[in-house]
Every structure is written in structure tokens, then in C-alpha cells.
Image (cartoon, rainbow, N blue to C red; front, side, top):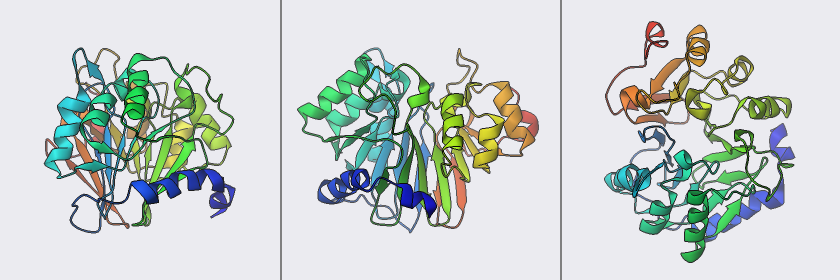
Length: 307
């Protein structure tokens, strides 16, 4: 309640008002009164599909580029078709790194997208620039968000922006993961935290700013890198479920054994796209269920440190 008073009302209406006019017109079929968040298996990258009870869809990141191909075309679009989703309310890019935006142009070019949501931080990264150009060419509105703004859906789902801060260097060159967009998706009494590549400085800043970090589900920052998921951050979030989006036997050693040890010490159930494929969490507003493409259970504590 306190944080809602601190929200910037004009900025909130920028997203909400435009969404009412242009985004919520054609909900996709979605049985049951549930929210689903699906972390797709895009290898060493991120692509997440948020689907609300009334069939509204928010995509968070679009996977990486693959030479002449990309994970947007190879994974995200086929998944949307398999779910009967023909329109996306919004595509949100947490930051300009290729493993998060490489598939964005394919999505923007091949399916109806209501708007493109990004931070105000400028970048000359090629695939990020291509995504912005594609949105402009297709007359897709581009919305810039910072901390304090809320994306609201008419079925009670909200996505609250916790990072980057309002004083982020607007329209300056993107240089580090501390400016990654972080979203807290809430439905009823349940919440999930989608952290992009937010790093330790971003975590410390969100804690210091009193952001509402508590969430039962945490998509680990930066693919489980040791540059994210500090003890202090995990204690602030207090998740029961952690999801790692990383490539099998990736060259970066993600998720890092130190992070896995922190999760093990807190008895947090861990799901990994490199082991279990796509991971879907489903909320009825009171609790979460987890489903994986490989139909495997959460990794036992003894297995969390193995690779």
C-alpha cells in the first residue's frame, strides 16, 4: 500500500491508458482463472511469456540471435502458435544484450504486438537497434519505463517496475547490467520476480529503495551468475521457487556453484531450463504449481551443486 502511494501517477497512466486503447482488444484463449509464466528454453538467454487469466500476453525478452536465425523465430513464435496466441499485448526488453533481444525483430515482424517496452537507457547494440527500428517501421508504440511504473491488466494482474531507478541516466549509453528492467508480477496473493540480468549493485539499490521484493517465484538474475543473487537479495525476496534460464554446459559456468549453494542453504526449489527444458509456473492467485517440459521434479538439494 505504501509503495502504491509512491508510484508516479502520470507515468503509470502512460502505460495503462495506452494499453486500454490498443492492447486489450483481442485476448488469446486461456482456460481457467490462472496466471502462467513460462520460462522458455532458449539456451544461454532469456525469453519469458506471461499469460493472464483473460488471455493477455506479455513477453519479457526474446532470446539470442543465431547467425542468420534467432530464438524468437525458432522457439518463441512456435510456442505462441502452440498456445493459440495470435496477438501479444507487449514485448518488454529488459536490456540490450543480444541473449535477451536477439529474437525481438522476428517477433515484432511476425506477430501482432501492441507495444514495445524498454528502459530509457540508450544503446547502439545492433539487435537492440534493429528491434527499435522494426517497431517504428510497423508503427508499434515504444514505451520507456523506470522504477515506479505499473503495467496493469484488466483481470487483476500487475507488473510493477522495480528497476532501473528514476534517476537512471536517461538516453545515455547502456554500459552495465545494473540498469536491467526488473518486474514484479502479482496476481492475487502470489508474486513472481523477473530480474533480467540485474546484478549486485541493482539488487543493493532495490533493497535500499524499499522496493517490494517479496515473491514466491524468482527468475534468477543473469542466468544464475555469481554477479547476482546475493545473500541479502535472496533474504529480501524469500522465494520458494527459483528458475534458472541457461544453456546446457554453457561456457560461462552458469548457474554458478556459489549461487546454487545459497539456494541450497535456504531450501529453495530450483528449476533449470538447461536440465528440464521450458519451466512454467501457474498461479490461481493463492499458490503456484510448477510444470517442466521434461516432466522432471525440482532438483534435490544434493544435486544443486552438480553440473
